[in-house]
Every structure is written in structure tokens, then in C-alpha cells.
View 1 (cartoon, one colour):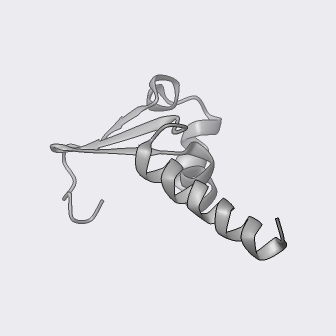
View 2: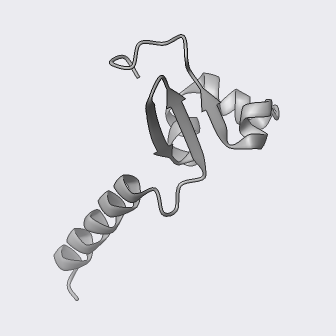
Length: 75
């Protein structure tokens, strides 16, 4: 497999992983919507969540973050 083929295979794997939730370790719930996410992505891109994961917030321990007061289109 050359580098271009490896890149395409990795990109497909990442896309499938994000959409299936197979390897996700976090769920965000907003109203009726559920999002299977990855802590390394959320924590790496958002300082609030990075701190929440480091400081042991209950949501970080449970693996479920409930955003019932937020607008689903914003989430």
C-alpha cells in the first residue's frame, strides 16, 4: 500500500469510526439528539471540555454530557 492509499484508508476508517460510534468514549445528549464522540477530539478542540476531563467532572466519569437547555442546531 502506497502513502496515498494508506491516507485514503485511514480517512475512511476515521469517518466510519466517527459516524458509527464504535470507538467513541463519550455521548453528548441534546434534547432528542445523541452524539457519539471522542474525548481526545472534544478535549483537544475545546478548553472547557479539556478542563472538565482533567478535573474529573461527573460527566467525564459517566461518559454522558447532557445539554438539555441548549439549542440542538447549535450543538
